[in-house]
Structures are given as C-alpha cells and as structure tokens.
Length: 134
Image 1: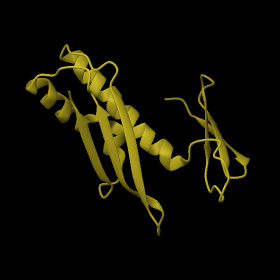
Image 2 (image 1 turned 90 degrees about the horizontal axis):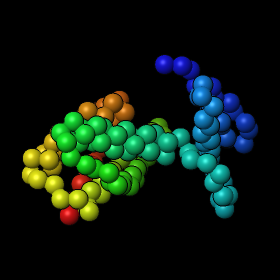
Image 3 (image 1 turned 180 degrees about the horizontal axis):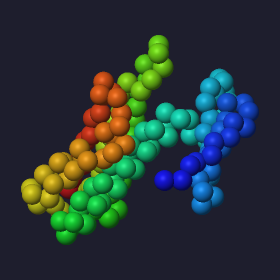
C-alpha cells in the first residue's frame, strides 16, 4: 500500500493526501466558541470503524445474495481524560427499509467480527453495535 502524506498546517490542523490526490483534513484542540473546520482525529477513527463495518456487511451480503444498499450508520464515542484515548464506541446500523430473514440477520451479526478496523482497536475499548431492522 502506498504511503499517505500528512502535513501539519498550523493551528492544530493537518492535511493528509493519498497518492491519488484525495485529501482529508483534521483539526484538534478547538477553543471555546471556535467553529470546527474539519473532523478531529478521534472522529476520523470512529468514522473509519463505522465505514469499514458497513463495507464488511456489504461484502458479506453480496456473497450471500442479499442487499444492504441504503444501509446507514451513526457512531458516537466517549474518550477518557487521562490519558486521553478512546474509551467506547457506539455504532447504530440502520437496515430498516429491507426485510431480512433470521438467517440473513445472523449472517450480518456474525460479519461484525470481520471488520479489520474494529479488530485493530485496543481490546479494552468498549465496542457496542446495534442493528435497527424493520
């Protein structure tokens, strides 16, 4: 895999560019009343976990010949104070709008364990995943 270049642009902001030219900005340490201009790194970590989980579910659904198109997720997280690190992540996966058999639901639930990003999180990070079915 090709390297991603990260540049610190000042004022607690970074700009990351991959070899194809895609850019992601991040920003930390917002002061009271300051408007965020980018995701903070903890948000990016949680978004990565959620996006990876949805992609994993999409892959498994395709292999088993059913659709999860239009599935949505929301992710929330908590951080410890000292040391500052991810404490917990709560992912809600909304699959309403499709009807799934008990077997398909079980396939999706088992597939959760296959997301490499979520598997890479420290073992003491609480990971709660909730499915919303019709």
